[in-house]
Image (cartoon, rainbow, N blue to C red; front, side, top):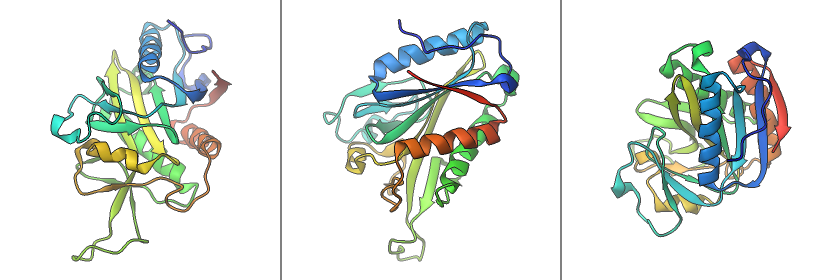
Length: 238
C-alpha cells in the first residue's frame, strides 16, 4: 500500500505537521487506504501528524448517519460508504478535500472542541477572502448568508453551505476531515440531500463572485491552520 511522505516520527505539535498536497484527482478508495494507514502509524508513534489536501473524481460518500432516502439519484456517481461521522456528501473536481490526521492525545482529548477548531479554521480561511462563514446549531458545516438573493416571505435570507466537516477518531487520532467548495459543479450536489439538510443550497467561492483558485485557497488554509492550531507545517507535494 502506498504511504504518504513522512517526516521523522514522535514529533510534538510544536515541531510541525506534514502538509501534503496531491495534484490531479485521487481515487477515493486509494485515499481512504492511505489515510487510515497514516492515522494508524500516528497512533503507534511511528509517523508524524499530517494534513493532506487533494481532489477526488465525482462521487458521493455516505457517512455513519446517512439516510438512504437522502440519496436521491443513486446512479449518478459512485457511492462510497464511509465510517466518518455525518450523512451524504459530494466530492469532485473544484472542491478542496482536506484529510486531517492529528493526534488528540497531544492536543486534548475533546472531540467537540476539536470539531469547533476545524470550524474556526474554515471560518478564518474564508474571512481571508472577505467571506463570512457561520456556524448553525443542528447543521453540520459552515454556512454563508446570501445577501445577493431575495429573502424568504418571512424576511429571512437564504443560507448556502460552502464547507462540510466529517471526521472519525480512532485511538485519539483523527482522520477524514473537511471540504471547501472552490469551483465544483454545484448541480452535482443535486443527487443527494447534502448532510441531510433539506431546503438549503450549496455555494462555492467562485459562485459568490470571487476569482479564487485552488492554490489561493491552499495558501489561506495553511496560514490559518498555523494560527488556529498553533502548529508549524512542513510542505511537500505528492
